Length: 288
Image (cartoon, rainbow, N blue to C red):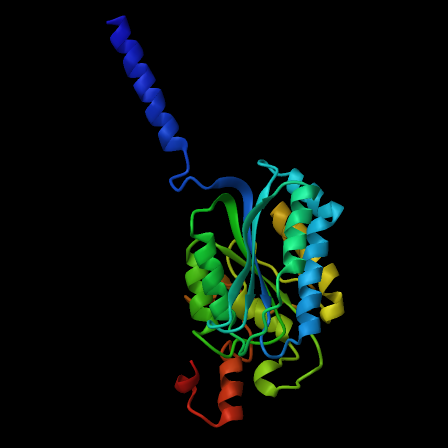
């Protein structure tokens, strides 16, 4: 009888251990982070390189390493993609675990050495879809899943940004934004918004603790991305600028807005598509 009880106890313990293990067997990390950077036609090679070098420098920064090592698992998983439209959007460096300066330096060197991807069209939605597939592939067993998307223009290609944003957030993924402000409109109005930070607040970000950090130009990107990564790794939200207060009352939130930040972009989240339609004088569905 004692032997039977012992055998049953061992079997029960084995079942408990099996249930406690991640179903997909992924690497346990505090954060699974996809860094998605804009390489659409409005981004030239120098600007693409500034983004790449900015992320590499941020990952090596002592404040980032300290933030990583303050977590429960003391490590994060990072993947990096370049996005423009679906045929150009690509994984530059796939999932790797960063836990210290050595692993951060290895990842940074891989980023710097990878060829620059230059694409066409601005499809934030295509970038979010690829990032979501990476976060769902089972490589990382993360306490939090975040997409860090940066860009210098509104969505004007692929599926509508609100539709994709809502689908991503419904999966428990947070989308944070890093809009890059500049005064160039060299490729026409379909690429440019003077209030791109508001567009990101109202149309792109969403999920628990979602936030925006603004880069005033491409030269400011490195500092902005470092600040943003520190907040993301720590699971904290930076204070919102006082001027960004056009949040809708809870009782009037639409089904679409409930997935976002609560900020309503007054010009409409389809502004990029409308600008393209006016510019090309062609029915929008042909360019979806």
